[in-house]
Image (cartoon, rainbow, N blue to C red):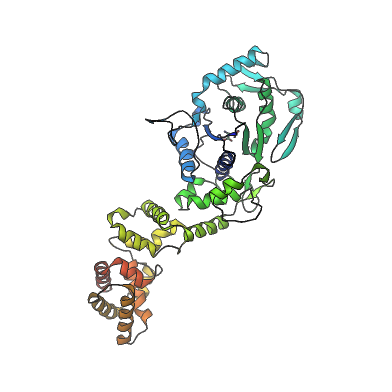
Length: 448
Ligand code: GLU
């Protein structure tokens, strides 16, 4: 039988890192087995639904590259090619639930109670043969023993999570339910519902939760809990994906940097770890730095341009060759793309803002004539390339009887606005003579 798995998020306006990992494990299992990965939006809670909340999920999955394989054709799709599929929405499947509830009612497996509809829960203990957790035997709690039945349709007509989740898994022929361990407590109800519909339940694999590094439960407010924060802070999706693979799953050889195709090859449910995973932002950031360093140049440009764009720096105003040369001086120098605007943003500004502390230290009256001498020498320099720029600066320093650093600091400040950044001679060469002279002139005017 072909594997069919699904990711079934509720649109809360937030994609938790744990949800992203659930999506990833389902996707990996589908790809590993050559099966199908279904995306189903569990949007029966009408009050909370919005298109934006759905978009948070779709954008997050797209950013990670977790493509889904089927669903109603959306938009003006010209054919059922990848990407034309919308996800399934529970809000569009109301009739299916109604039909199923009527079937339960007519078989005496559900009944009306004060306007709501309740399911007649099995009185026997239910055994869950979980692929990760092992065999779990669910005894009824005292309260459940008194009344194990539960509501499947509220008195306002709204079908309840347990019902719609099971009906969909059943009708979508889901073979494996891979989801967070927080749902283990619902599973006995789900198995009982499957049996009431006369169908054997799917295999279950409940994945342990992700905890904060101090072992506490990760909540919405914890740093790093939202996938969106990684998108905004300029993590590379491939690094986040790699890190998520290691959260609760471990390849036998203990390697850390793994390509997605390697993971697809190796991934299997029995290797999912049974203990809770601890989220380690430092490790993820380290891994991101590794990815950035080894990233192929075109991909680096692509992500760098996006990060600059998010910071309001429009690189399209500059020739492509200039953009690439500028970014080449920044590659490998930072761990997160969110550091790039501060590090190399000066390439893409008409005017730089000076760091006030540095300006106090380096834009001094004694430095003014020195900077003017350097400006003069650079204006006559041809070709304007790193080595000759370096020789010129050192020669001017020697003539003035000062160390090169005395010229390096105010020059960097004049051209970049701060005191840290790419190698000075290289960045001056990339900026080009015209911009460098303009920026030195402006600094000279500021020093007065
Ligand atoms: N909508 C449920 C959730 O967001 C899905 C549970 C499941 O995967 O079965 O947690």
